[in-house]
Image (cartoon, rainbow, N blue to C red):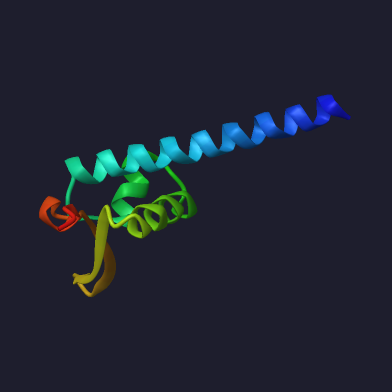
Amino acid sequence: MQKTILKTQSATLKRENMGKMTVDILYEFINRHPNTSVSEIKAKLNWSTGKVHSALRNLEKSHLVKSRIIIKNGRTFKEIYSTPWKELLVD
């Protein structure tokens, strides 16, 4: 019983760490490639759409990135960019 609990806790920690790494990788990518669409991120990082959206959700909740909807060549895209550093400062 104790062994099973430890394995479960270990697996949970690994998942949490992988999630944090994913968010960190995406944030760094967005900083280096501002105004990038979700589909471009997905293609360049070779990630699934769900993985990109999940990491983006975490970054948006933390106010580290912002997004806007744009239309290019008649197609709608979600464009992602880093929050300007002045907006991150707390008064």
